[in-house]
Image 1 (cartoon, rainbow over the protein chains, first blue to last red):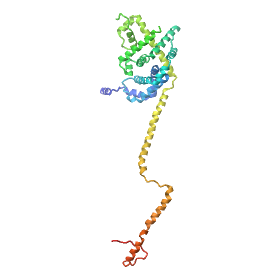
Image 2: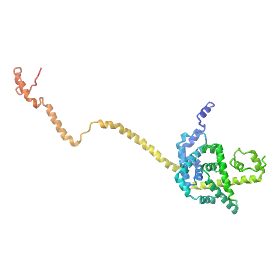
Image 3: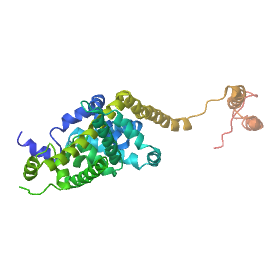
Length: 195
Length: 167
């Protein structure tokens, strides 16, 4: 057993790879496990439920077809997030998306989301302030550059570790931190406007 | 211990490192003692929490209205699977055709039924000609040979046909 471990790592294949490959083989279970997470990431990145659904399905299809290429050097969630990130980037670069982005009304969307915010135990005045704050944050996140927004969502919505985000985004940890600082600064600035 | 307030960068660093072991002990000590910085950090964290709650809520609502994905995945996989089966079915057919094509090109053609009567008549005519021992054009020569050799072959019948032996 001691002699096997260096051989396994010499090929840069994780010992847990076989288990994760088996998990990848069962696409329905894979979807059931990771779909909410990937869909949420796509939805918040694209702000379009239909496009998010399309990206989510493409993500699982790509993962399933490329399951033999999965080296097991990161978790399945991180690997799927990486695939989703690439798909989201491709989608946002498309002309069709650019057109609909220009035509969309983010203010209405932010208000719609804010209406669903549950604020139990808050007075009506405080709830109103929180609602206004959310609308500002929502819009500021929407206007963040692509990588900053992705990093922000992965850290503060999906609560991924910085190293996982770095792997998923193909960035250095330092770059991830830099993006997060800028994103947080934008959010802070947006919150200051509600004061 | 820091004697001044945390900078915006330090506050953001604290928020983005929440839940990790990368927090600076100095920043932690300062936050424990400075209500102003603690309030600023709490406000930033609150904003992020509100955003997360709304995002998760909205995503869950959108997802609940969507059909089960495994059906969609099956549907989208269908063309690829169907294409593979179609190719698998076509390849043996093509190979079969290619294997029999040269044989088909070199094999004798089967006579058309409409042409058979004339062919039969032609064959009968050929058979008649072949069955004759001496062709009609050479029949006169046989008489010549018969008269010259009548001495040697007196037993020969007058109407019999003989072939000339030249050597």
